[in-house]
Image (cartoon, rainbow, N blue to C red; front, side, top):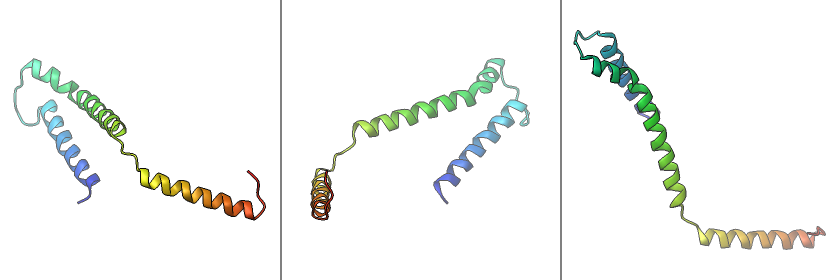
Length: 92
């Protein structure tokens, strides 16, 4: 099962549970305070997921590792390409 299918399955499960609780399909009599929180739960979950995503991206950017060996190799390839182009008559 792909990661997308797992996420969609989880969202469908949470969504159907939320819908069953808010519509009263299970026959449970929830207190009004629980129903008020339950109605706004999708918005809270969406904001929480956004904060998590933003935090994860920020952390990954902050701890990004430089590849010094690859940078040196790329610089040497650039120098070789410039030398080759200079031999063919191109000026920089």
